[in-house]
Image (cartoon, rainbow, N blue to C red; front, side):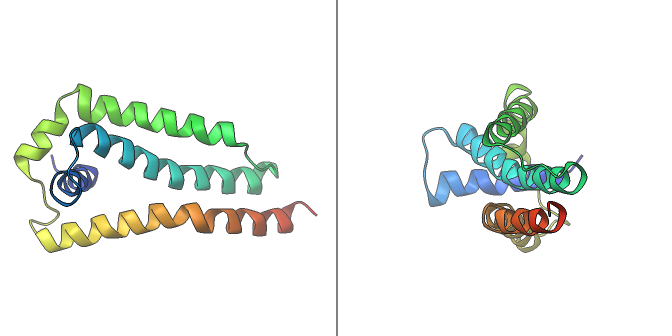
Length: 131
């Protein structure tokens, strides 16, 4: 079954084998993918905690979120051998290389930018809810 995350994994893997060659591309891909998912998930948790509990999360919780997501990705992709199957299958979204690249770039842009817009959003919510 085709998964969007499988496709994103494949294009990240291609990046770390062709654009920036790495001696351990699978491990690097899993680490970077987990880090970026952690950015976005951390911002979502921070926003939800600000709205519902009026509490700004501490850094250690963000580190725990990253470790948790990395563990899931490690077991899902690496330990299961799925990473080698993904590279072998070369998954594409709707069978299109261009659409797959665009979705991967959008995923990269949104997750990376959440590192920058997340604190502004939380500060805004803090000003609204914690008066």
